[in-house]
Image 1 (cartoon, rainbow, N blue to C red):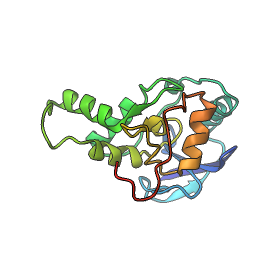
Image 2: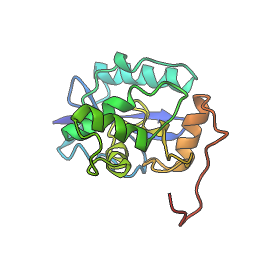
Image 3: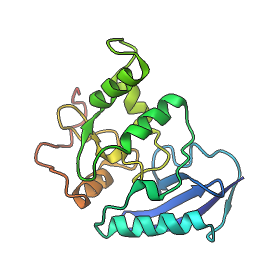
Length: 182
């Protein structure tokens, strides 16, 4: 059984999910793959300590602070490949960005796939897009190699707002026009 609570954020409502001890989900209302990794029964429960800690973390984050991800007990559910990508996302510094290709290069090196065609930025993009703990596991910090702001399941306007909140250098970043090859 999993438990949920709602958090009211400047980006709109957020659903938090827990296994009772760990945070297993954090989704923006209307996000693609909303609740996708927790298919089991979810029971509303606001009094879990993990939800209090997550709420404090989010309060600090949205107030412009830099809360440490390590403060939260995270247990994202996914394949070993996806978990490896999500672990890398947690290493992207606050206010900085990286690319899908760079993440693919690191994952390939970690898994011994260096130089193999089977590791692509698109594979990493799939893992990034299915991140079940948005904002905390900062998938919004991943951009296209050319600076394009693509691939945020919560919507590009929210990705931009999160990057702006963090003070990221937005000068080289842009929203591609529909149909533009990346």
